[in-house]
Length: 303
Image 1 (tube, rainbow, N blue to C red):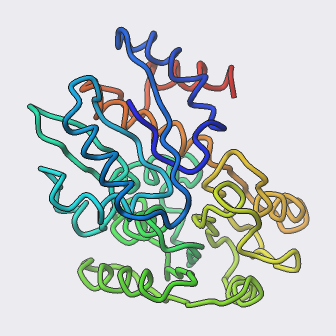
Image 2 (image 1 turned 60 degrees about the horizontal axis):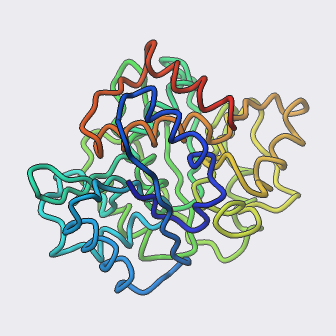
């Protein structure tokens, strides 16, 4: 199994995977990282996918950071892409079934499970909004999940999504138009962290603020300045769990004064990896229960 990212050698999964493989009874197997820089040429992605497809010992891959690029570069290589994956235009799970190469968007599933661990049912009834920083694969998937949540869990009163790339935001707008009964979506093209601070300042109390930019892990910095002010009682979610997480530090500096609830990306990491491992090895890993708790304890021991 492969791990396609930017700095795969720094991930906890390298220590976790062998222990998980033993617990899951996967037999003799190994995990190998494949690093691409941000904005890498499509030829590299295509070569990796073509190798996985034709090599009988290569079962699949988890994709992080490059999900949109893998989807784009994989046209003509993937044999199967489900409708949601085509709509989102991203691939996070690459796996084989009967010799055919599948690509699947797993971020909507992963973000749903991870968010459920942070926000109780009916949380949104108080009129809170959501601010998603970054309109890449993870940010778009979170917008999809929030907009299409069931009536029991509820939806934010409004979804804001911020990015520096107008094309990415146009893609989210087009998707939003297809989501029935979705709350209003407001997209913001920003050129600086200061502009994002101003958007943050207008959110109502209790809103969700999620950093899906990759800043702090895949590139240095934060999408906010140190002068940013989080809403009172906000839920602040950093999608990453490793790196120089400036965004997380900014939230923690205001945690007590602003009554924030803060989470890093550890639970997201657990759900993301277990979902893709289940795809790649064709095993069942429920998102809750004794087996998932066992895998979480194994991972925490080597975090």
